[in-house]
Length: 411
Image (cartoon, rainbow, N blue to C red; front, side, top):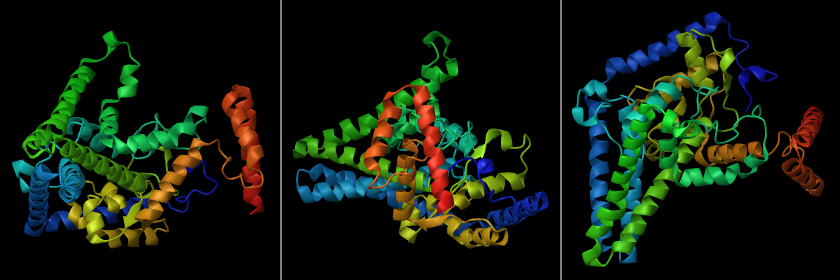
C-alpha cells in the first residue's frame, strides 16, 4: 500500500494544480446535473426498496415461526438475511448520508432514521460521514480501514501480534456490526483513559450504544424466537436470526473491504494534505482512495450501490440509484487525466483485499521473497523475528526488504 508520497512513482505527479482544479470543476458539474434532475423516479425507487425490504422481513419472520421444518428454516433465513442486507446497505447507509433528505419525507430522513445495527445512527454518522468521508485514507486521521487494530500499510512497523490479523479480520467480519459500534465510540482509545477521566460525552454515547445493542438482541434473540415457541421453533428461529446477522455482517464487511482495501488503492500522509485542501484536491484523494466492484444490477443494489465506491466517495449525498448513471462520466475523467479507475469483479476484489491482510500480517518483504525451496529457511527467520527481541527483528526486517528490492529489480 504505502502512502502515495513515498512511492517510487507518484500517480498524480503529471497533474498541475490547474489540472486538479479543472478536474474539480468537471466533477462538480456531474454532481450538479444529478441534483438538478432528482425527482419522482428517484423517490419511487427508494420507496419501492423500503417497501420490498419491510415486506420481505415481515414475511421471513412469519415463515420462521414454522422453522422447525428445515425447508421453512432455509426459506426464512435466506429472506431475513437479504432483508437485513437491504436495510443496512441500500437503505440505512444511504438514508443516513442524507441522500434522500431532499424529499422532505420524515420517515426516510437522515435526522430520523435508526437502522437495524448495533451502532447508533448518531454515532455512525459522526464517525463515517464527518470523519471517514472528510479524511479518506489519511494515515492517522481516517481509522475506517482498521488503523489501530490492524496493520494496513507497509509504513506501520511490524510486530509479531500482527501475525494474528487474518484471524482477527475474520472474527471482525463475523461480528462486523459490533466492530462498527466500537469504532464509532473510539472504544480502544477511551478505554485506555482512566475511568474517572473519561469524558461525559463518551459515557453518554456508550450508554446509548449499549441500549441499542440490548434492543437489537431482544428483537432477534428473544421476541422473534419467543413468538415461535407455540410452534416448537424457538431454537430454530434463534439460530435463523443469528445466521441472518452473520450473513449480513460478512457481506457488509466484504463490500467495505472491496471498496477501500484492494491492492492499488492509495493512502496519504497527514503532512502531505494541505491545511486548506481545495475541492479539486479533495476530489482527487477520493478518486485514488477508493475501488469499485463490477457486476449485475442486483449486486449493486445488495451492496447499497457501494459497488460504485469511487462515485460514492466523490458524491456521498447523491441518490445511490444514480451512481450507475454517473460512473461512465467519472471513468471518462479518470482516462482524461490519466488516472487509474480501480474496478474489478467481486471475487477478484475480495481476494485482493484478503491478500493484503495476509501480506501485511507478515514482515515487509517476507511473502515476496518466500518460495517452495526456501520456505524452511524463511520460516526459521519468521520464528526468530517473532520470538527474539526488537534488535533481531529490525535487522531481519532490513535484510528482508533488501532481498525484496533486489528481487524486484531482477524481475
